[in-house]
Amino acid sequence: MKFGFDIDDTLINLREHAFYIYNKKLNKNVSLDDFYALKRVEIHEPFGLTDDEGKKMWNDTLEEIYYTNCPAFPNAVETLNKLVHEGHEIYYITSRPKEHGERTKEWMKKQGFPVQDDCFFYGMQDDEKVDIIQKLQLDYYFDDKPAVLDTLSTDSVKVIVKDQSYNRGISLPRLINWTDLQRIL
Image (cartoon, rainbow, N blue to C red):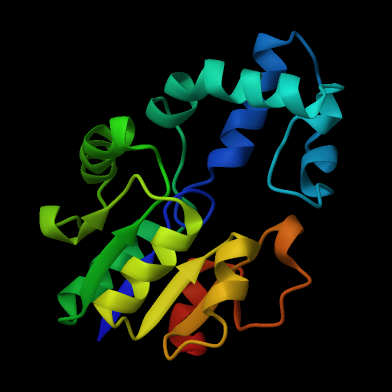
C-alpha cells in the first residue's frame, strides 16, 4: 500500500516543541495545560501575543523550531520503519517552505525516519498539498490540519486525523498514538 504523512504535528511534536521555545525566549512559564487547550494551530495566544506578533515570533524562531531537538511522537519512527519493512511505500508531504525542504529531509533521516529522496514533497500551499496527495494515489494519508483534512475527506484516499486539540471537531478516523495504527487499518 501507499502511505502519505504530513510531518509537523503528525509525526513530530513541533508545536509543543515551539511552545517550550516560546516560554524560554519570552522568559515566561505558560503552562502546557494552556497549550493542550488551544483550539487553533497557532500557539501564540497564551503568551499574550497578537496574531501579527505571533506570526513574527514564529518566523523569527523557525530555524530553532525546525532544526533543534524536536521529538518525534512516541512510536512514529518505529511504526513507519515497520511499514517499510512490510513492503509498503512511504511518502512525506509537508507544507514546510521550499528553503527548508532539503534540510528537513536530512533532519528526518537523522531522526530515523525511512526517507527516500523521491518520496519527499515540500514547499506547497495546502491546496497544492491536496493535489500531490491525489496524484500519488495514496491508500492512506495522515495529517493534523483541518484545512487539509476537510478537503480530502471526500476523496478516495483513506484519511486519518493525527489527534490534536484544534482538530477534535473533525469526524474522521483518529490516531492518538502511533501504536494504534494497526488497529485503525
